[in-house]
Image (tube, rainbow, N blue to C red; front, side, top):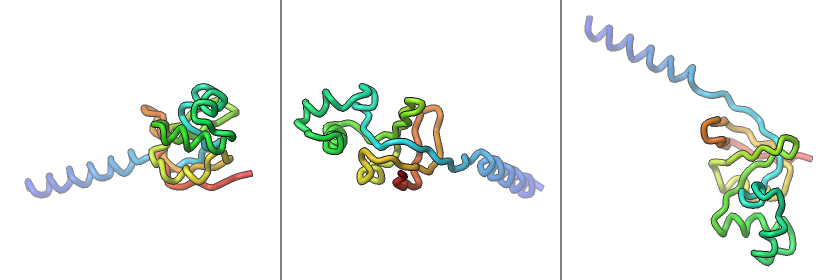
Length: 117
């Protein structure tokens, strides 16, 4: 009887975890860096890093300790990205990021990124 009760508790716990799992969503915006997104401009950081273009500024800011983020220009929302390798080739591009969103940390757990027009 004890084994049956333990088994039932384990099954219920696993079911609870599976229902709590978040669904993947899509997020659209521009891949940029945290510093410039918060400043709403690349101008200051382009001068600081001696970067002639925003495309060169973004990886320079990341290399200096920043992070790649997704900026939704329509809502001015900045989403942190947990994966810093996947967004690197998409700097300054319009993209669609798929993944799960953690509201508490405002972070997207990235499963994929594709360029959009």
